[in-house]
Length: 346
Ligand code: NAI
Image 1 (cartoon, rainbow, N blue to C red):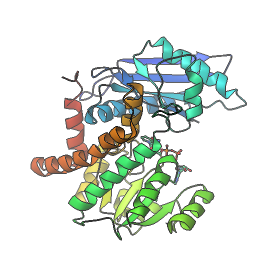
Image 2: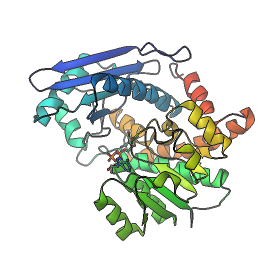
Image 3: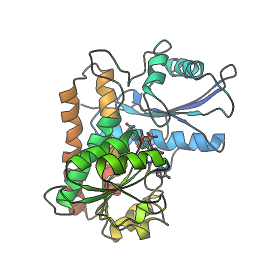
Image 4: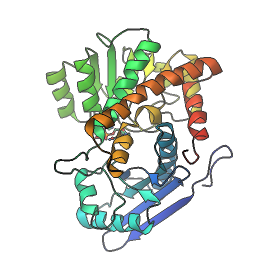
C-alpha cells in the first residue's frame, strides 16, 4: 500500500462510507506535488472492497503521471464508488460522495470517469466546489470524452506517420475495442480521416450503429485483439495487454483510451520485442483531463482546449525520439519522463 521502492507512495487515501445512502467510496490522493490532485470518479461493481482499493490506487498513480506529462498544474488522484448491490438513490449517493470530496478541502478535484455522468457532477455542485466536467449554458464545459478521443486520434496519426511510415490514415486499418463514450468519437474521427474500422463491443446495438454509419467490420470480443489490422485502440477497460493477448496481437501500433492497458511492465517489453509500438495510455488519453482542468480553471474555450489536446501528438513524436535515443521502450521512457515532472511546475 505504501508504494513500491521506485514509486512515490500515496499521500492520502480516504475511505468514505455513508449508511443512509449506501455510499462506499475510496478517494485516493496520490500526489499534490504539482497542485491539487485531479482525476475522475469511477462508479463500478467490484468483487470486493480490496479490489476497489487496488483500482483507486493504480488509477490515481496513473493520474499523477498523466497530469505531469500533460504539463497540467495538478497532481494525481482518483475516486471509486462501489456500486451498491440493491436499490439506491443515485442523487443522494452522489451528494454523499460530494460531501466526502469537500471534506478533503481541495486536495482532490473530481470529474467523470467510467460509470459517472455529467448529471452526477452537476448534482454534486451543491455539496462541493471541487468538481468539474459540468455542462454550462453558453460556455465551455461538460463531457470530456470527445476531447479524450481527439487526443487518441492525434496520437494514432503521429504513430502511423512515425512508426508505420505512412503519410495519412487513408486505408489504415484500425481495430477499436469498446465503442463507448470515447471509442465512438474516436471511430468517427478515424472514419472521417479515411481509416478502415474493425470494431467490437459487448453491446450489439453499438456495433450495429458502427456498421451502419461508419462502414465498420464487426468481430467478436475475443477476436478484436488479434484482428488483422495496422493499429489497435483499446477503449474498454484495463489490462487488455497481457501475457495471453500480447503474443496474438497483429497490429504494429497500439494507442487507445483505456487506462492501465498493460497488465505488467513486462508486457510492454514483450510488445517492443515483437516490434509493436505501444503508446502509453496516460500520454495518449490525457485529452479529457486537459478539458476538465481548463474548465475548472475557467480557461475553457473550445479552440484553446483543442489546441492543447492536439499537442499530445507532438509529445508522441518526442517520446518516440527519446525511445530511439535511449534504446528503451515507450512505456519505460514515458514513465521516467513523467516521474521527473512530479514536482511543482516552474
Ligand atoms: P464507456 O463506459 O462509455 O465505454 C466503454 C465501452 O466498452 C462500452 O461501450 C462497453 O460496452 C464496452 N466494453 C466493456 N467491456 C468490453 C469488452 N470486454 N470488449 C469490448 N467492449 C467492451 O467508457 P469511456 O468513457 O468511453 O472510457 C473508455 C476507457 O477510456 C475507460 O478505460 C476509461 O477509464 C478511459 N478513459 C476515459 C476518458 C473519458 O474522457 N471518458 C478519459 C481517459 C480515460
